Image: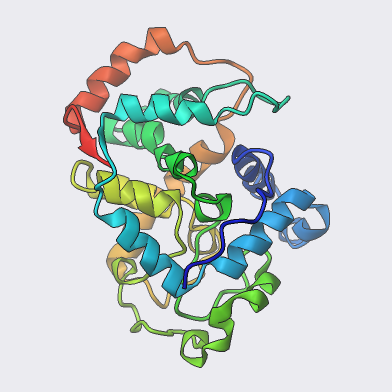
Length: 285
């Protein structure tokens, strides 16, 4: 089922979702405070999740995987795609004038300062490049947002679970059981998560990066699992081990934003060398 794409964008810019998630999971926030997020939520974020939960069906996800999974759109380098992503900067946003690459550098430099492996630094640098989907006409709710399995019952740990009442899959009995179309502990590689920049970038980069980096890119927005322990019944032992890396990455993703602007010219030689270590000159997107 192809969801309608004519609805107006609920967010001023897609970084508003990142800011909302960082607020939800700020260090020291109690469980009671977390459960109050709905009353305090930005109305535009609430509308974003309403659309996301209504339209992310199993049929929609499978259609998007077919549409983008062939990587036949174009061939560009990591740098060219980063420059393309920079056009997402919203000049009307009063809160930031950082480019997308500078946001990525804040994440990767925080990882680098803590002495992590080079592939981990690179994962931080590229982790949001999949947001180029917005520049190809994809609606925000199909680019960002907390991810979750489709084709089985939704966890109550997903933000705004009440909005799933409008999802057509809520009327498919097979999809409303604990396992749905899946088998117990079948492994996340056999599970379809809601479509967005995570799955797309994983598809683009999976032949070039080590497996822990692949897990970071594919599941860094899967908050119900790596923050709340949901969907363990679908994960296997290998998933559980790899999720240690996803959890290690998460604080850098959420809390590395700051007022200090990265010096891109100074840092570029390091990242040119890092990108060249793992990627060819151009890759398929």
